[in-house]
Image (cartoon, rainbow, N blue to C red; front, side, top):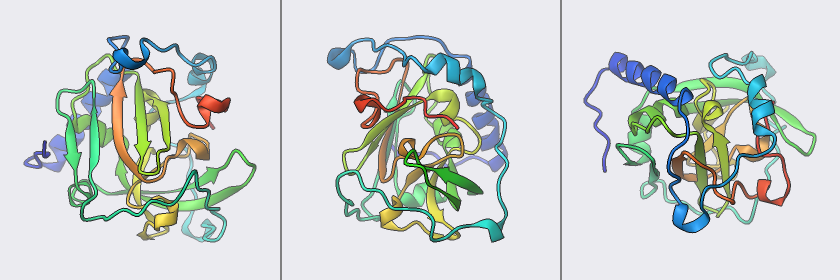
Length: 236
């Protein structure tokens, strides 16, 4: 299904705000993948760490002269996928009323936002980076999610996968980025689209994102590193 872009910026922002509020108030529902995994349990660290999250409060950002262009280390899960940007499609589905399949042209026609934040890796290094792209909560608003959703799954072209709590996904500084430091996002850093957010550790910020699935329950498969014992919430 193609998106309908016949609306004004004001209407778009109104839709985004209304959807964000309804999502944050959501409860439990029927899991999307019940035939595969049943009703997964919440991660042990979710309730505690979610108390520390301020879902609509921006994190302080940095200035242009503080960007560290050489500090962002490239980590690869399996391989660097080869993606034809003209043929690329982002699928957004799950427990939603209006599932979408978006081209990069569709995505770049939506309101652009930029931020300069510190990217923090669990391995102990960090880098100040400028990311630019589309706010994830504005994309979520377009698919009209049901009020029961609590999580977002992210799938990548290299087979990587991860999941977030919906409040973190809707944070105003959680982006699907297609720019880095004012230029087109390099393939090694996740082009055409990657997650970027100042409120999560680096392994939660999936590169080469091809699918976002919104659900009311987590499956037993919560993320590539998370399923190997890494912390699920991974908040900063």
